[in-house]
Picture 1: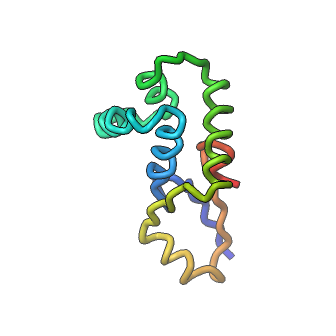
Picture 2: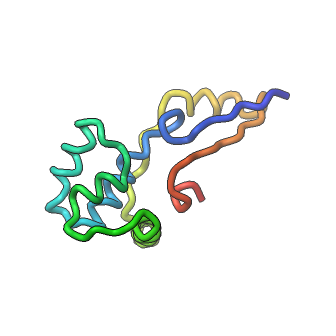
Length: 113
């Protein structure tokens, strides 16, 4: 049996809808346009987006904790949107017994649990 390894975000799904929701929850709804503008201009690092939108300057480890806490709160309240699934997801489901799949990510820990 062959093993196929995937990076989840960008290969199987687009997690931006979830990431955007978490950032808006952290920064307030008034920041949504600025978040979208930064993302569309090519800034995809969530910590960089947060720092450009927030008056509060925090280090990366504090940001990661705050991001994960906000993510978990939104998840418990069932307020997270579903990620967009790419066509590859359908292929994986159709070939589930032919391969062993390993999913890896460099994203936030809470998003992958």
